Length: 388
Image 1: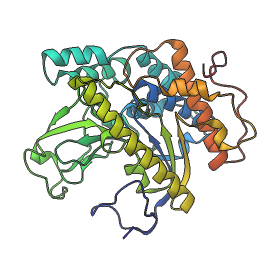
Image 2 (image 1 turned 180 degrees about the vertical axis):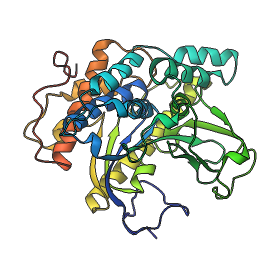
Image 3 (image 1 turned 45 degrees about the vertical axis):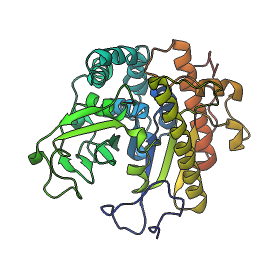
Image 4 (image 1 turned 120 degrees about the horizontal axis):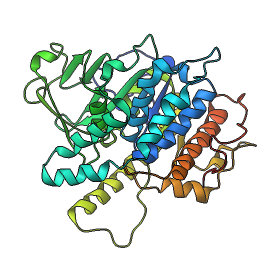
């Protein structure tokens, strides 16, 4: 039987430890998908438009996986410095959010990590975390994220390879409902984002060490015992929830979903070596799960179980049926959607195209499904490049 406030096609599964309220809370949550630097920059464009329309300070939660967690982590760390004006627009958005993310996007961090993993197994995740710390997060911990009375709760999601459940990083606690809860965690933000973006097979897993005494007593359903609660193996959050929905959908009425994930296309000659072959299999699985969740999200909007909007890097802006949108020819936006899912340096021009595309499609989704009183923006954030 479905819980009240859900539909038969709900994109998340409710578990025994979830709240039993009949209806979700009023409030807006933002979900940021995975997709490497491509998604990171696409989401940055969406945040740019959300800031201009004063939606950022209205957010109650930001839930993220993988590449989306890089964007979310930078936004969360910057939150106290954004300097919101009386309208709710952050004056220092470009300085505090855009600049560090673009600085990271100019660095290749996946290849050095993979090469190190060939020499010392398990070192890839450490190198990724070190790079995140060097370029964007420094030595800040989860406690640097805003408290609930100071901004949205940022939830960075990873998948637990032992429990097969979601491991949630946030300022108030880390939690796997089967393993248990650790309150007020001081795990480095760079480690949390590295765990969320630990793409298998080469960048995974991130292994965290804890003591049984670190956990709230009896806070885990059935696995609050060694080794589950002492040596935790985490991988990309998109393995479990590729749109970052779960921790937002179960609580809030209005859900905004930014999907920067790609899609594995047809190929006549798939690779047969174990590394590229495994990557291909993972891509096919992700295709099916992502498409299913997208359909379930949209079905839930239509059924009235939730309000909000979905926009994706593979969306067609004309499908929103608006009289006026920014010019986004589908052949150009499709090329952006096909940018490889990597943590590899991008040119300045490609960065700007992805940011512009996220900005434009977020704007269309907001004006169609959330606030029809919004005006079409005059131009892209980076006017000279458009979307390619």
